Amino acid sequence: MENHSENYKLRHSTRWIYSTLPASIAMGPISTIITLYILQLGGTVIDVSYAIALAGAVAIPAALFWGVVSDVFQRRKAQIVVAYAGLAVLLVAFALLHSVAGIVLTYGLYAFVTAASATPQNLLVMETSQKQKWARSFSRLQYMASLGSTIGFTIAVVIASLLSLKELMLALAAMAVVSAALTVLLVYQPQEKMSREGFASNLYAFMSRIFVSPVMILRVPTLSRIRRLWAKMHGSTSDYAKLAIIYEAIFVFSLGSGLFNTAYPAGLDQVGLTQSNVFLVILSGMAIQAVAFYILGKRSTDGRKLPTIVNSLSLRSASYIVIGAAFIFYSKIGALITGLIFYPIASGIAYAFYYTASNTLVFDSLKGIGRGSALGAYTALMGVGTFLGALISGYSAFYLGYWVTFVVGGILMLGSGMMFARVRRL
Image 1 (cartoon, helix red, strand yellow):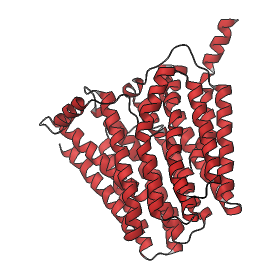
Image 2: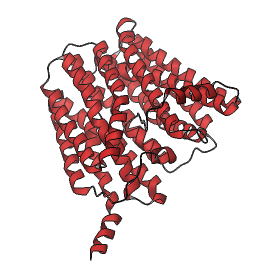
Image 3: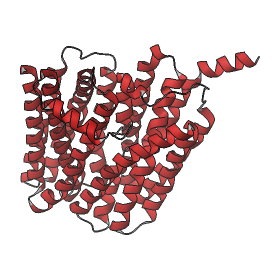
Image 4: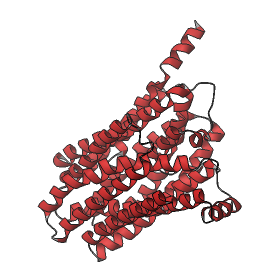
């Protein structure tokens, strides 16, 4: 009887993945909510950039801290519950705060607390499913995050049109509580524990891990290791020379993305769109992204990674520039139309193809290299690029204009694509 019960739990153990959906609904629209709330309280796009940049900066030490906590205590369920309970508390705190500075600082705390769930969730996938089913399980976990964001923005469109941002935050806090309760009910921890090193040995584990939380640091790289990797990447070996260009191109991509994404919701608000319509534009991108990831989950870009990256970045660049052109005239209708057409292309189709192909390219390029440290450096580099882009974005939009910021973001996408094109010629 005992063995039968154990086998039943193992057969049904991956059901816990569905417990992540309500929390993903809650987290999906938070960045846009915070942007609109700061502006509503009298802040500027510069204050918005401080909040986004602070969250990006906090993500790096948070990834290291929660990774160590996961290794030391091995309490997957408890760590996830802490993240979701913290998410609920912080959403209530946002609704109660009336200070721009308080919102900015609390958003940094939000980034730290919610990072707690990423590592144990991905380890649970490896611990509760057979290895040959990891790809399917990781795909489902990633899809829950993408689907959750889409549903979250749908809820935001409705509530923002009828009530206020405060009521929206409280509704999302309730979703976080639901996820915490479902985690307690559904998460079953087998006796066998997996190591975080598994993220560096399996492509699907790695991609799912950084989709949930964009920074992954398995260990703090020593200065000597960094120097060796740097020297090899700038040496004469063609494989390392390619890797150097790839890392530089990804940094430029992250810089441009941070530049555009930080200012875009603020720009939509400042040009005169209602809060509900701002959420609607971002929803259009999230919905198309969810569909694109679902389709890509059934396809392979092997052998076509670099062409896919270059083409997707060209598409993203063109979309950013067209959106920027609409802001030259500061037209509400123009911003709404281009947002509903070109934002889904940039953040939905182009991003999904770029994300899948670029991460596969990086993962494959690190064969024979200390992959754990190199992947940690890769995600940290993306984090630094996004942080700098976010910080610059506020000042650029405030002093030079939103259209300049968006066009420059598009130019950086094009520059990143040209750098990837160089890899094809090596």
